[in-house]
Image (tube, rainbow, N blue to C red):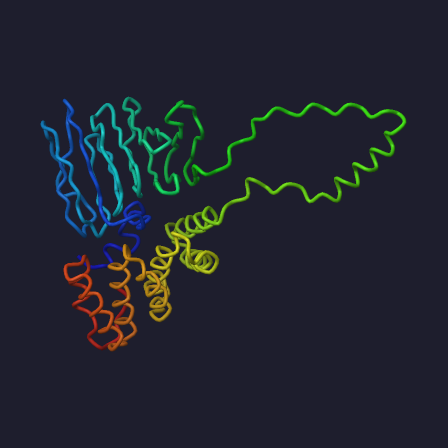
Amino acid sequence: MSIESHLREPELSSEDRESLWSGVHLKRRARRRRGRLLRTAILAGSLFVAGVGVQQHQARTSRTELAAPTRLKLPDGSSVVSQPGTDLEVVEGGVQRVRVDLRAGSAGFQVVPNPARRFSVMLPRHEIRVVGTRFQLRVDARADLSELDVEEGTVEVRRRDTQALLARVHAGEHWSSDAPAPETSAAPEPPAPPSSTSSSRASSTEGTARAASPGPPNPSAPSEESQAAALFDQATVARRHGDFKSAIAGYENLLKRFPKDRHASLAALELGRLKRVREADPKGAADALERAAKDRELNDDALAQLVLSYDQAGDRKRCLAAQSRYLSRHPEGVHVNEVRASCKGTKATPR
């Protein structure tokens, strides 16, 4: 399988390629149930599940090293694509009720419509309820942050402790757990009327004071992290819709304004890929990919793209150097065959 089968649109659905930060392993745990439990055979580097079976006994906890997203097929026909580093547990996987616990990392869900079945995803502090939809979830456990992007349908967000409905998120909308809560404080009591002897002077003095006061800071002003996340989401939506020019501009803006944000490495990888494939700019791609390669979790994909960029430019010397870096660090990497076949010394077309 070529590297572009992982990274190129439109062959991959968007849920297969989101949010590659958050660690290097997928932890799947299953509990004993009377009904069905999942058995998945994972092929590292491919983006599909090779088999789904039924177990009647308690499955053992497993920890698998992965270099690519992995799709889990559920008994009701729904699917979950989990990214490397995701802590995800299928707690209930029956036809009438599905519950998935997402404690950390990133996963995409495609839920088959079925009003008679309850499908819920439990986040650290919130519950996601759906009937039939497609959406992306990200959980940053250290920052106590959960984020939701809905691609199709409508999703309900509730508090886990009180089950209070917090939001209904529709297709194309974004929700974040760090969004400011609506003001619920009671309106202040009106001030007592001033005395007749001092009303004019007091009114003038208070008016001057109010005009001179700068006012309190806005508590709902977005943080740098939320601004970076919004830029990343906007660029990603543009990429999904084929607006590659806007996507490139969005990723570049994120890298310029928030170079140390946790989204920056993935933005650099996406930027490099788009510049190489969509703009035929291997030099510009190489600059972004070198930046992405500094992230240990993205190094495999970034170095492989870097090899293809230099191969595309016909720069055999740099291509061989990048090839050597890849093979020394990832001798059994996902893209090893593609990398070994590169660097032939002639300009290549984007693959």
